[in-house]
Length: 343
Image (cartoon, rainbow, N blue to C red; front, side):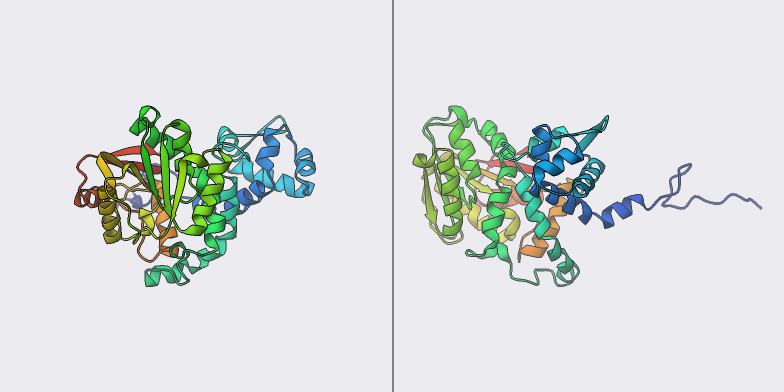
């Protein structure tokens, strides 16, 4: 009789037995959200960038306790956002690029916002059971206070995708073009595009409280003279006929169902001049739903906050855009998002 014991299916042959390390990191993942949100709230990354490189110096600059500064630094080192060299701390390139206040892609506000939303995750077991929000779907209410905090906080994350789209469209040399931004939120796409094309003009269609946020952003960039707003709901407001060279539908499709997306795409096709381009930016997954990782995780956000939304596949967008009358559809990598251009 052989004494050989078969290798369990979940243990690689010749490998070490699994450990709970990864599982424990995931179970306690809220620690990372808390540490990052607190560090961003106290501008630790900004102070590091300005030269404060010890816990004592950071505590003094941020007006927090020495113990608190050291705890945040320990966590940030663990998370790979801060490096330690000979007793001195410094931002990693990612932290320097995206977490220093006032930077071109400053995500520190988003880090603080997410810290305030941790409690909503406790609803997820019931939301999964019922298939939709158990609280009011804030993403679908015009005057929700939700927007006052969310719209400015998420603006910066769209800058890289806006640049990708501008390059793909050749906006810099496009001359006197007209742009329609549907559900434009902060106006960050419009601001990016108008800076790159000084002859372009843009119109944003969104709810009045959100348009007010966009007007402030465009004014800060001295672009308000080429920017107008239409207050309304894009589901029902007339978009015009053959009126625009470029239309934008950014991070809206994920909160809408398939039929609503087809309907809006069809109306946007009608609003474009012959040869005009529709730009769709969103978190899009592979057709077999094997990735990318961030869009797959984002599906839980939509389950919690929208009635019909989700993270849709590339094939979904192809189908919807084709039904709307577009024939030339291309996908452009803008991680964690994807830019779709349809003509």
